[in-house]
Length: 217
Image 1 (cartoon, rainbow, N blue to C red):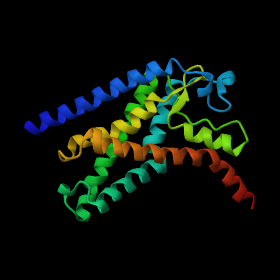
Image 2: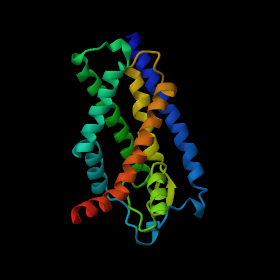
Image 3: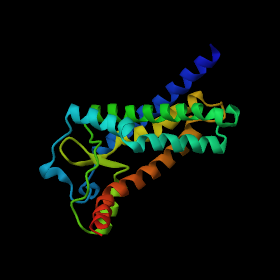
Image 4: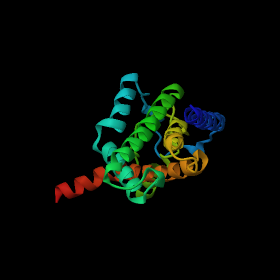
């Protein structure tokens, strides 16, 4: 009973922090300027996401694509080899526990991202830059971790994306030992996830070009 109460208090604290941060970001996003616009913003020919597209994007990013499995597998493998958390013990028989923990983390984060994006009418898709300049394309891809488009195709702070990146590892500390805190371990893991997400967006931006290059060869 005491353990369940502690877990509930942790989750409530995490959600409170996320709500407060989201309100601050939303207020800040209302004062955006043209300098925030991503290169070649699709505002002139933009079509907002439909509910069906949101569902498909949620399922694809979190369950259907191979990357979702490998993301969970290698995160669990990292916890296993790093003996994190140490109290769970070592050994191959502990890997299913780590895998289940990471699966819950990414499912929670992905669900919060999708639900928040739907509520705020933010775009969860990746739109490749229409420009050809490699520097602008790189900036476009890297900025996609913190910026997205609203329902009118205008650039805005990606509140949903950031909530998804940080909520998963922060809430995950609810079933971790007490020395793993939401604002300590959770935020650090969120920072790592943000960096990995930036790398994924760079692959999304330049991957098709590389594929065409190698295919023609």
